[in-house]
Length: 99
Image (tube, rainbow, N blue to C red):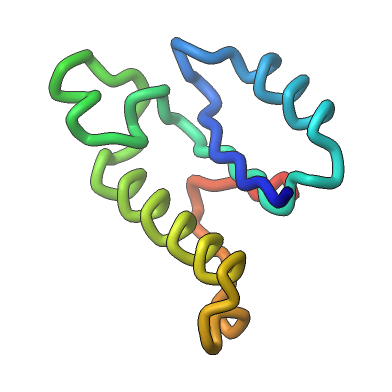
């Protein structure tokens, strides 16, 4: 099965080393792996930052937009939506694509 991983460099809930180990175990099943820079665990879901304090300086709006576009592109390609392969994973200054 095909897998997308989105992680953050200062995640206070899931250590990056744990993400790295999981990615290594999943091997070639990981099609895309993105690392958000200067972001914490709750940057992926805006309500998380409202309930808990977010660490890092990455804007919640930027993190949410990136996550939404990335997941939509990934799912469109997995479901073979028409022209979905014309889209690339989003490139941002605050993201390192590891796969």
